[in-house]
Length: 127
Image (cartoon, rainbow, N blue to C red; front, side):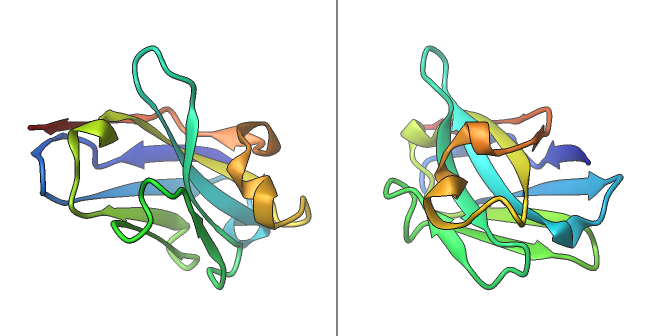
């Protein structure tokens, strides 16, 4: 599956952004989806994940209550709504896909459990 992330830009602290990730090439609802981010000099970290149906979502503690992941299987798109942005949210954000048969729960938190990755979109939060 091919993934194309978009929506990143420069925003002031306290602002909001919505990232989108459009999928193509395979049946979208066969895949759980995740958002990860990587800041300069840091490892890629889990941000949010959502099951193939959208019924179950997962969040990193650092974004819980501020970010919301959702998906529209009819549009083959997953979203990340980011509110109350902080400078420490500055990073390149990546979307990723993993087969729905590949397990649930903590498997969503691990980059190596994802088979497909988008190219990333830059989010910069100014103070």
